[in-house]
Image 1: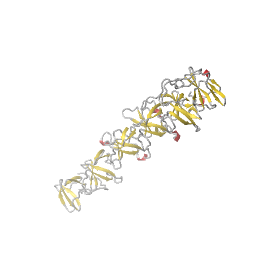
Image 2: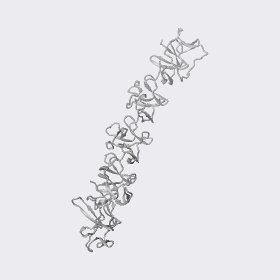
Image 3: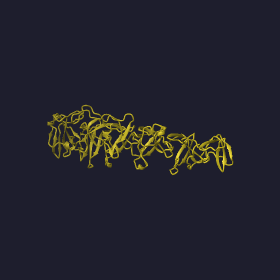
Image 4: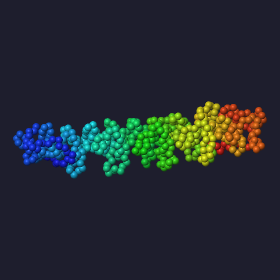
Length: 537
């Protein structure tokens, strides 16, 4: 016979079968039960009491200890396995008990599950009412991070993340599926509870932490690293990881990276409690390596319907850069001046909501003025960015307003930039005549010192330039009389020569420019075009 195990009280034990208190004896499938001095015993055919064994009655099993008495509300060790009997003495099956561990009444109570044969679940998973539970080798129900390992006996609290073997169980012990959990990394002990917490998504049906790109979690896109931690802020694709796409944060605390380090797609995923990738929308925020986070340093970025950042000339999610020689300019006291704080940049063009926008290799939306392929473009204010066309009135840093004109459509090959390039594109600032007004890099030229002045425009490379001379008044209107003396207060300012001797250009861009500058008799200084534009070095 077997030795009786130590008995531990049960908090939530419920009587599944009570032996009849009024009976003094009854037959059982194994022996005969008899009550002696208020205690139940099970006797064999020789009248000897069984000890340390299960006896059956009416389909239930009851355990008698080493003194032969019926054991109630206690742990039972039998044949190397562990069981529990309820308050009536019946072995519990397919049921739970909250109790202290076997042979340790001083320990905290834990939840245990007893299978259909009554044995304690150990080192395994159990499905109960459609939910999955895990138990360690001592039978304790596990909560939090759980690692199953390669075999059932390896189930235990997680000491780190193991792909396909790490799961999360909530406070009831049920494996989390199709839901979010915020917790520390697997393997973090209670002593390290101040460690950073991360959001995890546990997949439906399997309970495995989601990794890589998840494109439809409640209609949103989320990005996870290889250990299932949801990434937030600026997130980049690790193209070196081919089998399981890995994502990492570009702006992780104490490890901010420049955008150009991202070889794969880039996303923006909000803060640590948001996390979904922004898609088909504009976002104004700081570049990932901007640690100052001054409000004025925020930039605008565009993300497509898949959440991908549009960047120029990356080979990912963008066409090749439209131009590689782009410099930023500012309208400083009426003069277009190269911004000394901005270096040459790669740019790319994209249509968003029927408007044209240009972006840098970092994905920053252009604003204000940019010189592109020797043509000036204007992209509105810092919070605008759409490429402007047609007539524009633009204020400088002092609040004064200046007139500009930018082509409304691509121009033919007869049109030229100051360095002689052709095919001016839509949005390029006009050089020459537009609707009988004179423009230089898009800015309207006006006589400012006198009623009429001569403006000379040099077009072509430095060693082979063509000079076009225009006569403009204080409103910027181009004058084109062939035999007129342009006067102010009776003084001749400019005259066009002998009648019939002065010839004007007929081409649209340089219409009313005088071919032979010698035929223009200048009596005043020319308009200083340097005040309108300071070229890039």
